[in-house]
Image 1 (cartoon, each protein chain N blue to C red):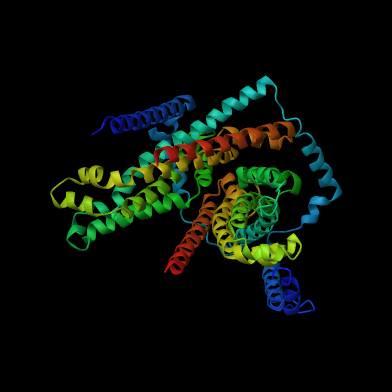
Image 2 (cartoon, rainbow over the protein chains, first blue to last red; image 1 turned 90 degrees about the vertical axis):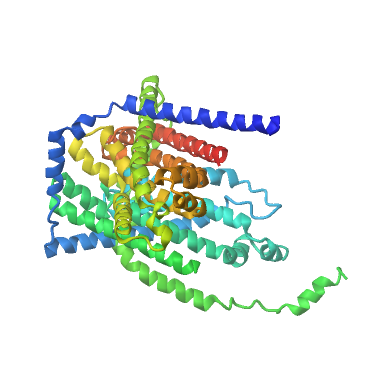
Length: 267
Length: 285
């Protein structure tokens, strides 16, 4: 083995060594500084308390009235996620256009600002948006829907902007040389080309948003989550258990559907 | 040639603007979507004009006006720094627990280390055991970490312990399932050769399976660490401490200046974690 390759290998090993030291240090510092109360969790009487707490979940509440209420909350969760995703797709497309350099001579003045806005929308999670929007819009599913829409618009807008920049430029420039307005170029040349990507990104985010919508209610933004935190707060464990089962069933159903559709599409 | 082309074009193009031939179908589609959308608008109580009534507008304006300048006195910044570290620590400790849970789950799940499968079909008992481990991982993962945290806050009380355990359980299931999938995606030949020649399962794992998949495993774990930071902020909202809890308190007291300052720190934290994770994945990949 020559000397250069040996030195290269040594350097790579050294780097891996430094990285793992850093990771170890971070882990130790985390555990030490948090002063976690394991005793509260693992002591015999604490374990007994957890046991009693968990036993309270059985049997789940199954009265018709309560099931009807839970079903309504489930529909509300689904509606929140669907509407939120749709709004996000529209807003994302509207922001993607200023965030993209559409052709080679496009000065794209707006690009840095639009990108900054998209990044800010994206980096604040749905739940934080919901907590902030509650102040402006009051309790209920409406702020939840808006929260999903804002966060998802950030995610989708960035993906759409990249799709627009990567779209083949031919059809758009054919229209541009005839002096057709930028909006109509987008509608008739660029949009049809990126449409399959728009649809698939949007569906993927919808799948994520159903999961997010289920828990958004915990801060008071409607759907299953709101029911969950309400009944858990009152220590009504049997009702909580029904809501939890509904939530897990919804998530599992969405996972299964997406797995099957992906397998079907990939065939 | 080039000078005559505009005239040629004009001659071949229709003189009148032709209406969009696909317009009818598109209009129909939009109407269909609108009809489907109607019940959703009712269910989500979608009333955007509520945002613009005089009282709520005044309130929003007052709240937003306080956003600038963000609160930046030394005491508050010190508190923010402390809470930021707690957020990072909660994510890191949670992910460490998750790792401890995920490794045994993944080793149990993966069919790659099956000795009975070497001679054809896997035997019945090991198959059932593997499926059970897989289902356990799926169940742990399918309850969101926020719900785990809500439950643990009731049991162990407020504080980071419930957040760490919640991340540990939810991410443990997720990591376990994905680790098993990654281990099974590689080439089986080396592992099987080792097993056939009498190596133990762990030996076969460390010398046959792991070397192929290690970069992918590491990069997925780093990516999940980044996700854990985001979710540990969210867990603060149910009382697990850190930046999330500060933000919850500030927004409940309508302290706009504090909210904007926490949001800025949070955006910065996410951006740094994002960069760091991308850099690590590139370096190790």
